[in-house]
Length: 387
Image (cartoon, rainbow, N blue to C red):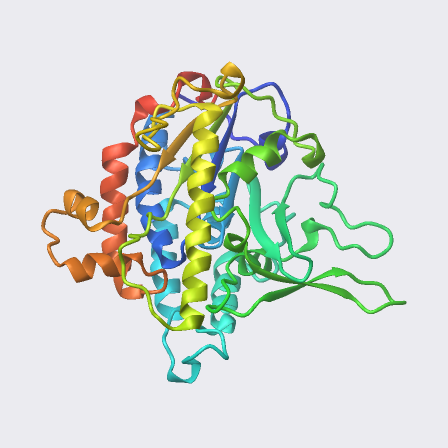
């Protein structure tokens, strides 16, 4: 069906129309799995809206949220990239940035060179493009963690937001932050990349206030779906979208659930990192429970044998949104079910790693298969179609 393209402000406005959110998980280079799922999502939605070659996911979604590797993908999609363009850039970025070096062995230095990542992001997203730029065609929310204050930072391009514009006293607004730098902050995974520093306050009579940011996955929001829902609906964020299964849809895309049976190192430093990864997974599991608990969800999965899929157990008895979740289970059994020709157990277990460029082609294949099997046109209610 034909539709009229909307501006960023029209996407973010509280205009009584149904609203759509896309949320993209963190997960290092496993983000290429998300890209495989996103290709199917783009194909389904393009066909649904007339099949025009110029259709983009930023036309359909009013807010695109991302954490870490999901922030890279979210920023590109919000600028109007096709999923194919994202895929091509992602492969190139992964090979260039995640290059192992003997000079970075051990735990004194970050494992990878953040300058390479910064250069790649500047080239891809634009050195001078800011978060307030008109190049960003829809709402964009990037999740980072300000480690020097211990606070999660949802950084967005909502022009009504309290911190969007610069203010008297030297506070620099979100709109002036370079887009590449905000994304780089969200991807600064501890031990993998050094933190990113962003100037928060600057005026002549005082020393600048500089925030030190690390990967948004170190907050509870490696999966940014719940934060995106809160951002869209809580009064303090000044977006103000109404809730209801016919008014708000949230589509959440994972980077693959790592296999918990993969052997872990006995070194104390690596055990600490593994404990953090385990905590991140616990947060992700809790978010999925909460989101299914408060929504109407055609893709609802069984949480466990005790809770079931929560379809008949809603908070307040009324769904606050329509919720779709697409992800892959990277356990040996599930990967073999997706790709029967893949029989090497060690190779399958290696897919849990988040910094292995050699895994990207296989992870993309898995995401493509999951997308083809899971993303159905019927998942998207007609009242969310563009008009």
